[in-house]
Amino acid sequence: MSFTVSIQTQDFDVSQEIAALRAGDARVGAVCSFLGTVRERNDGSAVASMELEHYPGMTEKSISAMMDEARKRFDIFAARVIHRVGLLHPEDQIVFVAVTSAHRGESFKACEFLMDYLKTQAPFWKKEVTPEGSRWVDARVSDDHALARWGIQASNSAV
Amino acid sequence: MNVNLKYFASIREAIGQGAESVATQAITLKTLREELIARGGVYAEVLAHGRAVRMALNQDLCDESAVLSDGCEVAFFPPVTGG
Figure 1 (cartoon, chains in turn red, cyan):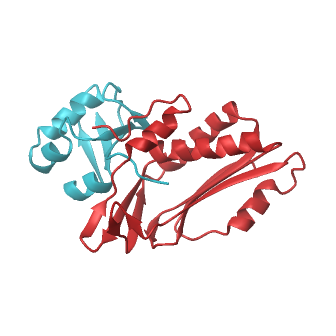
Figure 2 (tube, chains in turn cyan, green; figure 1 turned 180 degrees about the vertical axis):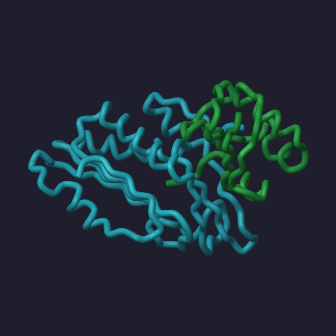
Figure 3 (cartoon, one colour; figure 1 turned 120 degrees about the vertical axis):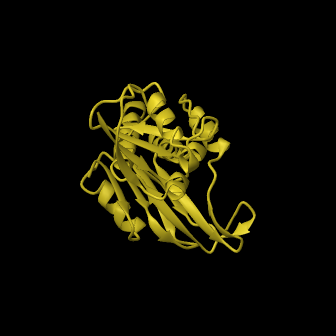
């Protein structure tokens, strides 16, 4: 299955995705995955729903570039990234990253690297609906710091 | 030359459209941004220097020194918040 990206409105099945990612590859001894979901609260407000916007074309291009970078840095066999867009509600699945490798260390690291990269480099924007009205979510400095740990300087949250 | 502009998220909402094509003499993205700011109104507001504006040329993140070419795609958007 190798390295694939899907940007989609529909939900996905984590078990099916992981099964497909490692199917037919007996070199695999470790699968690491991350699942991001919608929280009911953010920055002190209740979140009724959120709308996820993205930049079609650039999104896929930027995530493919991150996967290329992950392959250079870590000894991994395959990776899968799914990111949902459109209208989402608390408890919904938003983002999924899974990586396979021979031993756990490489897939743990690669999975975290991909998520850290995605948070500051992939063109997605969240707009939340709260009791106070709709608001665009602010970028976090902590996400830039997370990517900096990998030796990549990000200034996504800077003015 | 002609440049295809794209706007996303809060910048798209403020400008009131997601895309437009403009004729420009600008060599760099910096000059193009200044031309748009010179339109005044909401363009001057949301693209103002000192605002958190991210830019992409042909779907790669870039800074204002990026050199434009005929038919290129330039996008302006706020900091990203996916994941």
